[in-house]
Length: 305
Image (cartoon, rainbow, N blue to C red; front, side, top):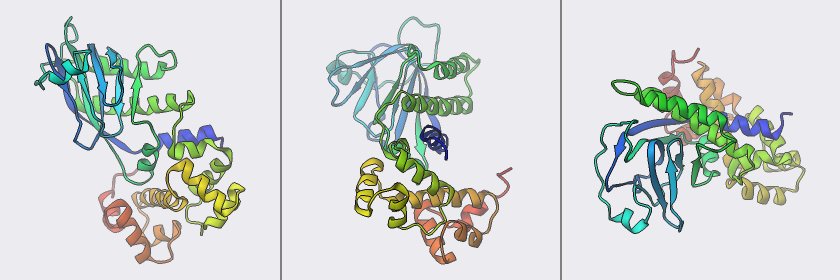
């Protein structure tokens, strides 16, 4: 059996997300910016100068310096601004970004974008994370994250302009390192990460990951965790924020996607992940993933290997 720490790493490393840039540039003078209302997770990396982060419900503004980053995992009420006072920040206009100038001695340079988390297992992991996560350039525990941020800064210096693809991939990696740092510093995270931190539930979660096609019942899961059926169901929901059935479904669909990408037939995959008929598997997969399993397999033909 693997340790709960390694199980948490497995969950975080398996987090499926895409990072997409929408702004790389510089603000100066009076300004404010926000992605509030877009219904998306976002990130802001400070690559030059400083600015202030104002989050609704938090009385104190947060000063962000070069090398700091904020990852907003919910559609929060917030704004970035050059003004420390929240009223002044709200009164400032939204301005178009200027070209990035890392040598400038005024204003702030930002790399901003969105995260898109895949449905299923990745969504369950993200739901247990904090609403927003702050990376500090001077955090002594963040050496790996600082190294990645250094690569981002180097890419921002690239003439005539940085590569959007490279910045997206570096930000993706930066976020994963920040999550790992949060976990190993003992931050109070919920969801599947909280489940994996509990020895009894970590053992069950490992079994579910290794054998998602087994005919799992609530009773057999409770036995594996060493709890009564009612105590197991209550505690599982408290820790994961989801029912055992929802987590099992997410793990089954995760493996189904991997098997389909590897070229297995729909019938083979359905049987491997615990479905007695192709029709039942097809219904479950289409509802969870949003596309028929045959179409999903076809979309990924030739991409693996």
